[in-house]
Image 1 (cartoon, one colour):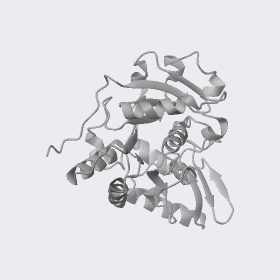
Image 2 (spheres, helix red, strand yellow):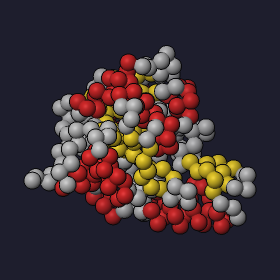
Image 3 (cartoon, one colour):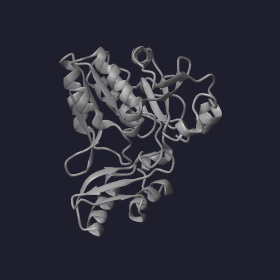
Image 4 (cartoon, one colour):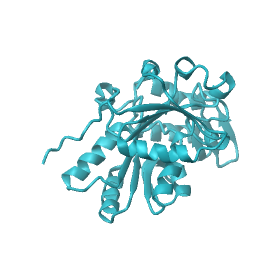
Amino acid sequence: MNSRVKVYSTNNMRAYLYQGSKIDIQHSSSGGAFTGIIDSFYRQNPEGVCYGAAFDENYNVVHLRADTREKALMFRTSKYCFSSYSEALKRVQRDLLEKQSVLFSGTPCQIMALKKYLDKNSISKERLLTVDILCHGSPEAKWWQEYRKWLEKKRNSSISFFSFRWKKAHWHGYSMCAELKNGKRYVNTHDLQVYMDLYFSHLIMRKSCYACQFAKIERVSDITLGDFWGCDKVMPNVLSQADRRKGVSLVLTNTEKGQNIWEELKKCITDDVVLQECPSNKYVEYQTA
């Protein structure tokens, strides 16, 4: 059996600007596209299951399973740490063997690992929808764990809520927010910015990130999501400056399966949602993945 996982060329790729409803934007890292995809997936597959990165009860970043639309919303927003996902691969296999429809979201390397795992065990991927991200790199889990312990010790209280991208501040600038069990909230304080400063220094990335085979336009997933940096230059007349500041998603549909889910989303958009196909591939110039 050929163990090589197919990498999709750009021949059938289509790119979109997306900005969801006000409430979806507030609970998302960019424009809320992932929420729209979850909604579309569950309209087509009411009994389906979703997998994605979330915080567990100890604020470790892990891949969890959700069997309802409401539970799947915990996978929204960026987590700047490589998630533990090996157990999720086994559970996805079990779901597919039981004829469940599965949406699996993650980094491109996690999507590749899942597909290789399923191929090795001769599991059909017909019912699998994959969503990856334009990834800037993923720090080892130990760095997030050490940072969290340091922050909790410094503030003398445990974390009860944490956001790497606090949209109530703004989209640009990677605002961070921590709420502690002592009732205090901190936004963009120096001790919060320490982690993102380390992230953008590239000093804490996994070794494989320094020679990432997925840092290119060709994708391994059905749909790719990212921040639409440069949308003001690529599609200057679609959103006002004020609306762009709220967050905008770039969506790439890479396969027929991905496009079908996106067409389902397009059927149900409301007046407060902005969705427009990119007229060219100029958006590539502004992406850093």
